[in-house]
Length: 344
Image (cartoon, rainbow, N blue to C red; front, top):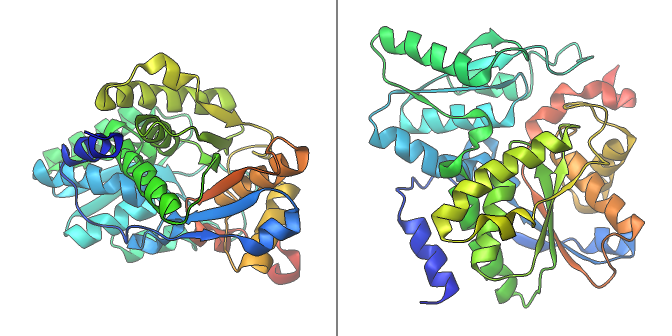
């Protein structure tokens, strides 16, 4: 059995609901490559997964929601900030599957919010998809709080299923084992030898899945997670925790995989949800060079990180770099004050 066949067999072990528009496009970034005068740049468009305006959590939900349906759940429970991309995709998946969705919304994590931050972007879409919510704080223990919510809903006669924060657990990360295979197949078809993948890293499932999947394919690709939390140790810990479980899933030793975890902490801004000048520059660059929309919280920071690493020489001129666009575009509407010429 080839490595590709072995990875495909791992993916087949788990029930999956086809929620996303897959495979997502794999395209050259010609103008951005020329502008940066550096390595050849490509983009993997996981902002184009379709469901609920798209994003990387759709891949995770194909497996997580399948588990919920198999367990006869009738309501998905999760948590996130007001502008959570993950919650928005969970709410959309619930709507598509005919399930309820209720989430804890963390109201105090992001400082200095715009006046319409609580009413537009992702939170607006959550409620269009039929989700309901209740307040949480950053000080709450998320696991305990979600368990408490689930018990209360169960007592009312419903059958709740807890989707972990960021859809980040072993089951959700299997979606990015599949993405690793998809990227490898697309690169081979286009005769591209990928050396790096750069993406936003926070809850850990995307990076863990890519590392494990690429290792199983025996591809020497550095997966660079751009810390979006301003908390690199926490991001590293979350990636490692899920990667440890995936190692068992794919039959690889954890220690060599752990050495592949690369977290870049210089482009995270002052805090989660806070964009610095490099992120704003990246947002404008993507829009005006490639017609791409990246957001101030995740994909904008990731693009700023990729551009910064190129300018610093951290990524060599002969590299072949894939920018994994994890989505997040609805959040940009909640950050109008970042663009003062338009925010009046």
